[in-house]
Image 1 (cartoon, rainbow, N blue to C red):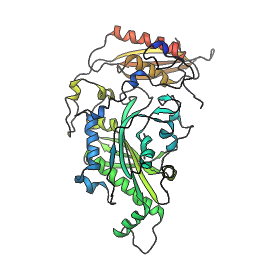
Image 2 (cartoon, rainbow, N blue to C red):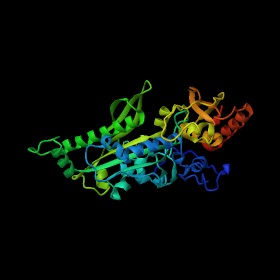
Image 3 (cartoon, rainbow, N blue to C red):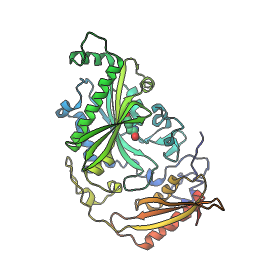
Image 4 (spheres, rainbow, N blue to C red):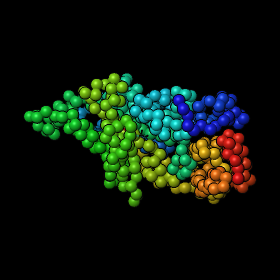
Length: 408
Ligand code: DAH
């Protein structure tokens, strides 16, 4: 496979971990120790953690009989099975190809995805487990876990976040029976597949609106057509909350090829699926403005929340920001996510935001330079200039050595 953007020559001199960033130039492995250390931390299992509170609310909705009238009007003899302990390393096939994500899709590139080796990645979404769950014979299930993406650095992005995926499979015969018995359709004419699919799509929308009401209270909804390689039709749901439209989930009907690949006859079955990002919901619900806070061990954060209660977070302090600029000449093949990875590795969670504030190509030399503004802010104390300068030196050093960037 051709790898477009992995300019990381060799991280071995970092001596961070002996097998990490193998010195082999051809190695695709790009999971840094800082990410690796966090695998298995399962912050969504910490009692009273905002992510745990949302998780419980969602599980409650799917498991608890109390909410049965809100769940689905189509009888379900199979209870939702919940799995939240799958290991996040999955095969490239499970994460992408089984879901009809093809090699031309940017997300497959090691620029955007953490590779464990040529054939394994840190899952980029929980949908990666859907095919295996369907193959195991389950008809309705929910999976929850940590997902990983090489992404920008700002207050709403963190390389690890959490998602819930849900799937329900319907049998056309049962759907027909339901449609006749409830009078959705009169039995004189044959029900077409597309009418049955519409019934399933409406069921999906009904459930997801109710689920969001269960989480957010009375809110307005807006359905937006979307595209996902694995569903058709596909939608996103937006809710109006605290004066803003907020995109809360993606969903749709699984493509017939996926059912077929999962061992189900698509002539006899149809399935809906959805995926929800937990941090996005938690940030709005609890008024947490900086995504890094979900990882803090500071009791001043955790002690503010308690199970079952949605309560606004009161920032215990906001320490002053410190801005530093770094300017490099960059090669044509420069990959911004590689630089961000170095910044994360050097600084841990101390950087709140990184923006490219200037790009300039010298017409005489044809050389391009980029200036990045790094915002440092510790969540629990004030950083000194000396501390930050050490990071700056290290970032420069590594960018030169690893990414071949030339300092200006
Ligand atoms: N996996 C998608 C993402 O990470 C979210 C999603 C969309 C999941 C549609 C689904 C779905 O199961 O049907 O953006």
